[in-house]
Image (tube, rainbow, N blue to C red; front, side, top):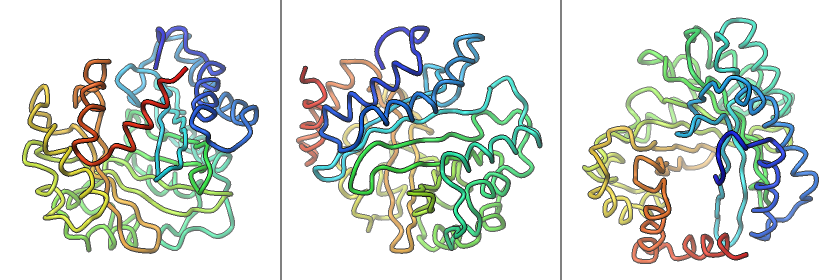
Length: 307
């Protein structure tokens, strides 16, 4: 993000997302994209401007962030928002409000994903049941601008309060898939559970577990490998982990994705924890990418810097 946080408005966020999409050649209607992004971000940013309440969505305390995803030669731009007023207790009324927001953005279709058994509104009640009133950032909504299946709405629910075994009870089919992987980092409960929706239909679910013992390497956390997405990033991960500013135990997530086929695993790394939160650190990352066998990502970053 650029500029001081106090200057950030929903219109500015919408311009950034639509502008990045156009620069990356993402198909779509820029004007319609601006309207959707501004609609999603307007209320949380208004509250933030009024009282300065810090969200736990990002390191800067803002209730909104944007990101770029690349799949082969296709790009998407995403905007994710912490939708609940951080001053408000998570009670029955606010949980119901979150369920309505989820249904509005994801579309509460009549046929839930077979692994979930509920639509977006029911998912909120299922995953946030018995959550403490002080749970920060209990639900985040992400919308993606892109083609080739990359345009989607994502609902993320924070499950950090779960006791052991809660995934088994609340989402048994998801739990069965995750536990069957045998991956050491997935033995505990997830910090976050997410679901991607396309045209009102749930197409995949995701869990986010903390990556423990970062300096031990990625293969140790994943139980020896066998997952193509992790194999692609493992050389980069292991090389950069030795240079972490400090011995982080919570520097990223191990993300699982289930869509009815083979379980996929990805590494989800936090920018500031890995030292990429300033131009020098980001430059070091971009210089390391070609050596790690991912030159296409560096090429995408160069495209973003072009005027």
